Length: 250
Image (tube, rainbow, N blue to C red):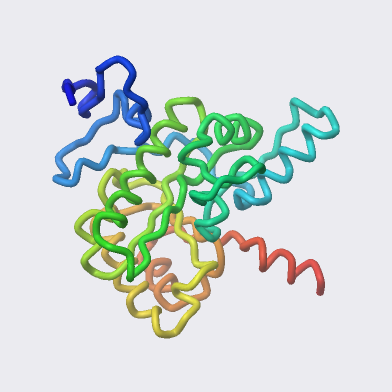
């Protein structure tokens, strides 16, 4: 395939080529000095979110608003993707929009324009995933976030890591001394077996990126977060959707 260096990335130029891996998303991106070719995704958000909701909630809010012909509705929430990948990265065809954000990026942008901002998509780095899948998912997190930011969405980077071998790429393309967001509403660190691994990755994140503020979607009531607070890092907890539902039943 004939390719040329453009915007710091190899972009197909032959007529008739379908951009199945969304190379357009990284046009203009800075690939910095990391050896993994992960694009840099700057923080574009200028304020701390008032609240964070997940993609499922955002899609429903959007569809409900459109159904009542409220085409100009706006929410002050940031939208995150700390949910099961099958709810936003499902390769199976579906009549309902928003289940494969990699293909349905126009729809995602249309929805997110009605919200205050977004946390970058959280494609998984599960321990049993092959290395190529994990590094590809990190690439997609940064590429998607960069593209959303370039299109006017207020962006805060979500961070995901796995076992220690992921440290060599999991933190690539992230800003120094910035606001970052992590999710604790899934397996780690809720599962005791994963808690030490989670704490080790969190320590590595701090050592490499030195964030001044860490947003936590889910519980931040773990010892590793208390240590960070004592060191001067601002930890802000946002309840997960499940926690909000249970709180509402009390």
